[in-house]
Image (tube, rainbow, N blue to C red):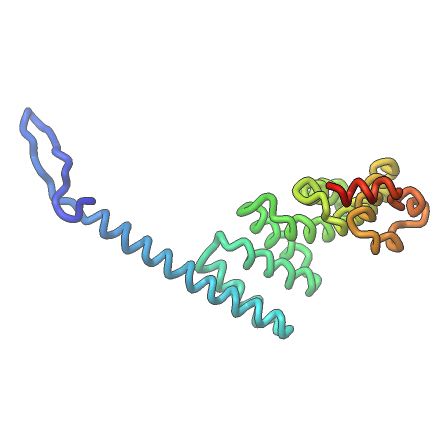
Length: 201
């Protein structure tokens, strides 16, 4: 790394001229250190925000998470938690914006996919179905996502797909069976052979 004279010669009329330049290596090094400090501070604030949430100081937690994304705009967990707080407060548009920011950073972030799908189940069922399918594509044991997927598909009259989603939900977590809508309950009960196949894998 050059910290003083440039190693680049400017050639004019056959003459090589050495030029002084600012110290780019030192600048980029200091910028890197500054960025590292910001990320480190953001991580500390993230933990503080999570603690505030745990003690139900949601207003304080939201302010802390906003400070996190100011320092580290690529912090998906801070964006996600801002979405959770906004969703809890009924601020649907803010929640979607926050989840979308988290998903731009990590398109397979299952928690953000799921929460945004739940927000959209009534207003944009097709979008919700697409998001839930992304969740279960990444985790075949995501029982609650399968349950919501089945409910969304059933509302759209896609009964065969809904039946399959409910069956997968109950196979992954039999305790969900009572939550399956009555018309689908019989078909959602996993057969003994299916249960055994699931345990031998």
